[in-house]
Amino acid sequence: MAVIEPLDLDTTASLVDPGKAPKRSSRGRLIWIRLRSTPRFWIGVTVVALMIIWAIIGLWFTHWSPTDQDLINSRTGPSGSHWFGTDDIGQDIYAETVVGLRKSLAIGLIAGPLSTLLSAFVGSFAGYVGGKADSVISWFINLLLVVPAFFLLVLISPLLKDKAWVALIFFIAAFTWMVMAQVIRAQTKSLRDRDFVKAARFMGVGTFTILRRHIVPNVASLLIIDATLGVVYAIIAETSLSYFGFGIQPPQVSLGTLLADGTSAATTRPWVFLFPAGVLILLLFAVSLIGDALRDAVDPTSGATRG
Amino acid sequence: MIVYLIRRFINYAILSMIATVMAYVLACLALDPKARYLGRNPRPSDEAINHILNRLGTNPDDPILSRTMHWFTQIIFHGNFGQEYNYTSVSHDMFVRSGVSLQLLLLGSFLGAFFGVALGVWGAVRQYKASDQIVTYSSYLVLATPVFVLGVLLMIVATNFNNAVGHQVIQFTGQYTPGLNGTWNILQDRVSHLFLPTLALSMFGAAEYSRYQRNAMLDVLSADYIRTARSKGRTRGAAMVRHGVRVALIPMSTYFAYSFGTLIAGSTFLEKVFSWHGMGEFALDSIIKNDINATAASIFYVSVLVLISSTLAEVLYAALDPRVRI
Image (cartoon, rainbow over all chains, first blue to last red; front, side):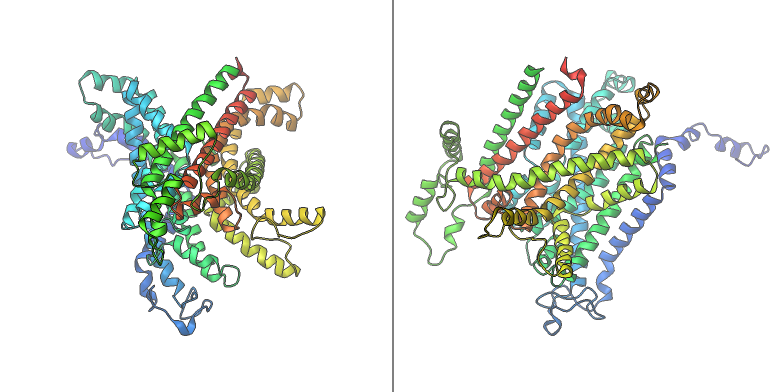
């Protein structure tokens, strides 16, 4: 495929540079090639990207702000002025949805990967070090798994009430890392006795350097999938908490509080519920499509692409 | 084998006991029982507040350790979970409410598991066909819908259905209509109330399980023993069920236990949405009311459910996989 120019030795040398050639068929590149040809991936990415752009610039298209009260047109359905209709006190559902989406997106996009980071750290450490530390950590993980994370989050939510909503991000991440940490721990245990890890250990490389350079890159594909699906879990956690009054507190708006406000009128004036719900479902569906496509690309023997 | 199961059970029991005690400590730290009285107008005197809180054993001025010890010994030696903020017995409320919750939870998770397994097997057998794609994408769609949104969406559909038919066929508030007579009427009423929350919970369960069952089934379908079963004369259906589904269920049994926690959380949302007075509602309300005893008791209830489901999963695993039994 390279253009052969026998006279110019320098270019030929760089074209067949042995250092560069194997990189082309590296694992990351292989995954990317598989991913590139999956329509699901592109649909998911496009929808999520559009949602993010919409959350940023969505308010430019309406002259209502989320706190405006258009009392003359309260309780009206979708119209030219209020695209998604209005609620009891004339607040514009479109503007509120955009602002709510911003908060839910921010929480999901930060809390999901953060929880993955935590599980990578704890899981690989426990699996690599082994012994007493490992037993203590796995016992602790099992203890946290006895009570479903949602109940723990609800239980500590009173501590959150007077804090900024950003605190919710860390609380969600702090209670959703356990299952993935167990998976990473099991993977690390099988990697620990592989030759390349042993070689590094015998050369005197420190524990955390080995984890960072040799263990974590080998479970990276798992982590990427988990971070993607973690976005879904984090957004569901946030909306569920806020819906029942334990997360984002009014007057702050998130998709969860918006849905809570809309529920009482959902059967009589469906637009107050259906528009925020539709936006939420579309976002979560798109993110799970990306996660699913990633899973197939990383492990072609699993799921939909198996021959 | 029995010894192994008993050991696992004891292990889980100790874990849930510790989790409950830690939940009590956490509740003491997070909840402020005094807040319930300080906001009143006129504000009760400090003596009155302290008297009430001392009687409940939840006075934040006492050290947490001694409160925890007191609470724990009461449970261990008297089976007494203390009193709620209005002096009703927590144990009594827990007994009545868990009956309500378990109805929904057991029916929902059983139907969810059944349809999840059925859809997963069906999807795997018909891999890549249109029906498989429809099942896969609808399960993603259901999973992308938080359970409480699913509940409200079903409510909207049911309202339209009721309007179309002309009378309330599907009920969606509460567990039953009070003051009905006649066994048949009461039964009919219960079913029409149970329908929507059960449908929501089992849809959620089925969507989740079907994805895992499909993967597990695909692993099994290409195995040699299926071909052997076919070649010794078993029909396709019999080979699938006796040799395929049974083997594919083995990894699923662990997964059932893992995901039971999400189902408990899901049924909690649905109790709130459909105004059922069960344990889920109890848990959320007692946290809002800063009721430490009731909160800790509901966490205890959840951890016992997780304990039972984990043990059942081990038993199911042993029943399906002869290798464990040795």
